[in-house]
Length: 236
Image 1 (cartoon, one colour):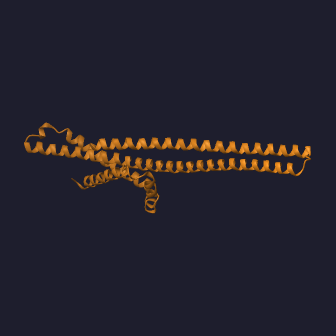
Image 2: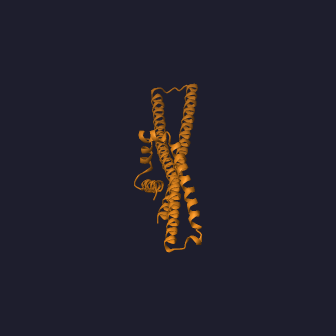
Image 3: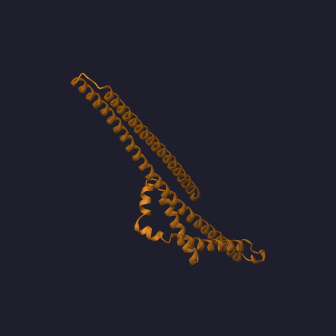
């Protein structure tokens, strides 16, 4: 095996190890996202686009060369197979061309698979972080709603106690003051009801957003499972 095919075969084995590592179930997408954001990976990813295109270019050339050799040694003239040695030599070259074709094809394919897996893991980790933030926001809105309802109840009790104490202190009630007090209580009750409704709508929206993020996370997880099954089937 020449140098370029030895290098390509070694790169293919490394790609298989990377794919298997990315598909390990006990490593969460959050850990991968933390690793992808590290300084070393960030420094490497600055020119990742050029590296990716350069490797695709090299693999593409080797893949085209393997197709050329495959066609060359698949159409051997029968006149050249005059002796058993020449026939064995021709079959050996044909076998090598087929081997190089599969090595180049799988190396090029797994390079795209690795890039896709990294993007999917990053997207899943981002969705998980957004769903966690939405859940915390929904819980905070729910606690705020409960506190507002409790404060509203305590305000009503205080108003009743004040009205009772003022009634006991004096037997005369000014109708204008009484009407103004009632109107003020009505406005406060309407404002409190509007605040509660706004908080309830915010809570419902947060819950819907959290459910949506959970569904998107499940879809991405299903895609990762399908890719893992396809890779395991191809390895077999």
